[in-house]
Image (tube, rainbow, N blue to C red; front, side):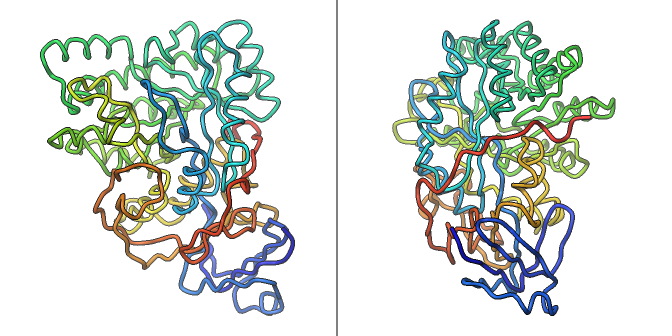
Length: 467
């Protein structure tokens, strides 16, 4: 795109600063900022001017944990790259990092190629990939080096889901040793899947089949134990570690201890753990199935510890783990057996608004909102300052955000391709008004003006936090 866009009169919020400034955009990038009302700013002209008076001007969100079209439990996540990235844009997110999947018996390259094919030409916003490593062997380890060189710099492993994605401690150690050498970052789903499977079998044998038992068998202690084990394996390998979807206060304590020891250990949590709880899993008439995800929702008292972890930087990132399954026909596969409910929640459209609500509620500051939702995920996964901030040279991924507008979250009005909202009826303050992706308006004053295929694949450098 050619032409200049000027955003006038807004409060520009980044992870480090809040300034009343005008923002000049040319050829898809931010070229300059100047204090509103100064002679420099007043002299600027543009083909398109956006009045942001009374609004926030923030970097587009970076959601570093999504699963579009993920095969799981005999079905597929209901959002495609087209529907999922459009919904992300509606929610003020302009970059996703999705997970390409290596199937057991196949190469990393085959998995990555398959995900490129799903995404290419279909995305409204920019995207990158992590690689799920399900089959650690000598060839896989060599491929990890090649992927890092071409911008896939993070690898996810699972201590859960035996027989599907599961890696044992030896496989995890080998992958960590490799990442210690090639600069990659291991992302860990930390739950003791072997022990959980025993508890699942015992619960079903007792006739405990309702969705709430999903939360009861996936115990917080087994999340904490796996988190501890992952940290120690990473320490042995001399590798960094990023623990995904941390939900339990006991797991946060393990991360805090490791960070106090100076280890390169990082933690992510998700909106569902901050705003929902086992009360939702216990909803009657199988409604609890809507809230089945792993790690599971925890009792409410865990929420305060997660917020505290975000304030003290023991948790650094909030991503969504967006992995939607429709209630009708997908979640219902687990009627009579909670272990057959596809695991995952929709959320890619809700994250920025929920975290702004956390600002309104006093849990975090405005700058911390931008830090955990934009800047830190961009740095963690090698995209900063191209993504995650508003500064000259950065991609013009910019959101005009109305901090006063009120909305009610609902499946009736959301844009995710799923038949329920995890936050149905929740009232929030703050709403996305206009979204630019590389200078192109994707949402214009609450109308979708983007297009599938605008979003491009974004290769990443290695984690920017490593000592």
